[in-house]
Length: 261
Image 1 (tube, one colour):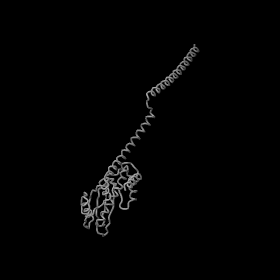
Image 2 (cartoon, rainbow, N blue to C red):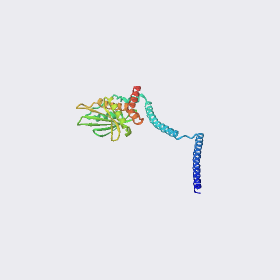
Image 3 (cartoon, helix red, strand yellow):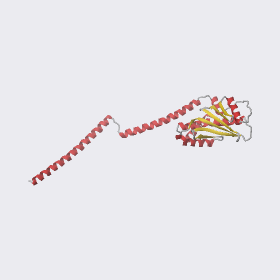
Image 4 (cartoon, helix red, strand yellow):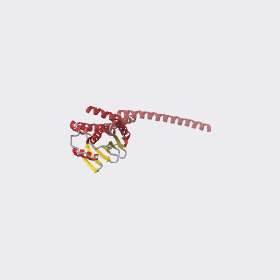
C-alpha cells in the first residue's frame, strides 16, 4: 500500500510539473502574439516611437534657439537700414562734424569755449559747475551723452562720451575683447567700460600745459570722440545683441565703413 501511494504521488508530481511547464510555454506564446499584434496596430496607426519623438524634440529646441538668434540679427539689420536711409548730407554733418565758420572768443577755461561751441551748434547742454559741462549730441545711431571736466591743477580737459546701452554680464568677456581690439586701432583716446553700471564710453583728454585755449583744440577733441563713437557703435551692438564674436563684429563694421567711404 505504501509503495503504491508513493508511485501515485510521483506520477502526480510529474503531471503537475508538466502542466506548469506547458502553462509557462502558453504564457510566453501568448505574450509573443500580443506583442506582435500591438506592434502591428501601432504601425498601422502611424504612432511615433519614443526614440523618434526625442529626436524631433531636440530638433525643435534647436530651431527655436536659431530663431531667437535670427530675430536679434534682424533687429540690428533693421536699425542699420533705417540709419542708411538718411540723407548723406545729414550723416556727413553728424559724423565728420563739419564745423561752419564762426566767431569765437578766447577763454582761459576751455569749458567756456565748449559751451560757446554747443550754443552755436544748437546742442542741448547743462553747465552744473564752472568746470563741468554735459551735453547731448545727435548721431547717426543714437544720441551721445558728452561730459567735459576741467582740472585747473593739471591744466587738462577730460572728455567722456557715453552710449545709450549697457553691457550685460553674460557678454562681458566678449566686450572686453572688442574693447582691446578697437583701442589698438585708435590714435586718439580709448574706449572703456565702467564696471559699476556696465556703461560703455569713449574717453580722451586735452593737456594745455600753459597754452591758451583755442577753438580748434576743443573742436578737434569733440570731433575725435564723435567720429570714434559713430564708427564703432555697431560693433558693440553686434556683440551685445546679435551674439557675434569680437572679431566678427569688428570685421563687419570695418567692411561697412569701407563700403560707405
